[in-house]
Every structure is written in structure tokens, then in C-alpha cells.
Amino acid sequence: MELTVIRSEDFDLTGDGSAVAWQQAEWQVMRHVTEGPEPYETKCKVLYSDKGLYVLVHCEDRHLTCTITEDMANIFQEDVVEIFVDPGHAQSGEQRVYFEYELSPLNVELAVMVPNHAGIFHGWLPWNYDGDRKVRHATSIIGGERKRMATCEGWQAECFIPFALLKGLANAEPSSGTRWRANIYRIDHDNGTINHWAWSPETGSGFHDFRNFGTLVFE
Image (cartoon, rainbow, N blue to C red; front, side):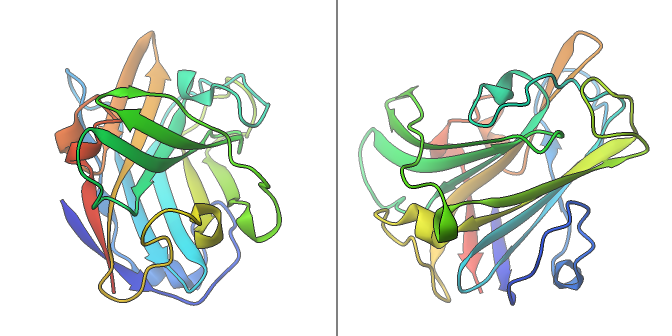
């Protein structure tokens, strides 16, 4: 899976993808990677600027399975979108270090640096996570309210990951032609079932399977 990421000027996030800049990017269908029929459409867009990476995810849904309102908590246990970026993918062997960012429909975030050795991994919270190192993010709810366990028709998540936050990783400030390994993921809990979607479906339900991340190519 490979995507050419279009360059853009920086813009404000609204959570609903209404910024004019998003018109430059095509929707990328995210594949349902769990067994059974696909319950909801899920798709994403990606842009970049001189300062960071923009991601927009559209999630059809009927129920916001969310109770957590504290940032940097285990929001992956509820409805969430996840973004994995591995700028330094040239590193060899079984050891990998990459960045993971998660956002729930309630606009609650989790940002971690993940050391992954042969499938054994754990996240480390970023240090000095403020100013130009802090991720900007916003969400919007379609056909419902942004509140815990609400009914809806869907939700959208928007975020801006600053390159400054990734300082120390190889290729953390990409230029034209730079290639990053990456994946965009969604987890949804409805009616007692858990469903997963992935932009790079080769990962299947193993969202930390960095060997099967897709590739972002910067325009």
C-alpha cells in the first residue's frame, strides 16, 4: 500500500474536514480486517505541510462506545482511530521505534512513542508535550451529540502531528520524495462485537505489525 501525500499550507482544524485544503486529497478507503460483514464505511485523507502531518478519518457509526474522558488513558479499549508513523523505517532487525497517535470521538487523545522488539512493545508518553510539539486535534459527530455512549450516524477525527514532536527519529522532517512507513487504523465496539479497519490491510488485526505498514511518499 502506497500513498503520495500532497503538500499544503497549514490550516485550522474543525473536526469535520471542512477546511478547503482537504479538497486537494482523495479519500482512501480503509479495509475491514476482522471476520464477518463490514458494518460501517471508514475512509481517510492525508496531507502535509512544512511543519507536520495532517490526517482526517471518517467513521460511519451508530453508537459511540466511549466513556473515557482523560487524555493519555487507555482509549484503545473503546471506539478510536489510531495513526502509526515510522519515519526511521530503514532501521534493521527486530527492533523498531515508531510514533502512535490515538483519538476518540470525544476528542480525547493518546500520544505514545512505541519501542517494538520482535512483537514485544509498550508505549512511552512524550516529554515536553506542549507548544510546537503538541498534536492539534478535533472531532465532530454526525447525526448526534459528542457525549459518552451517544447514538449517531458517524463521526470524524482530524489531527495535525508536528514534525517537532518526532525529533530524534530518522527522517522526522520529510522533504519531497521522503518515504515513511505508516498505517491508519480504526477500532469500533458495537452490539458486543469489535471491528477493525486499516488503511494498510496487510496488518490485519495486528495493528502493531510494522512490517506490513503502508508507505507514505511525500510530494
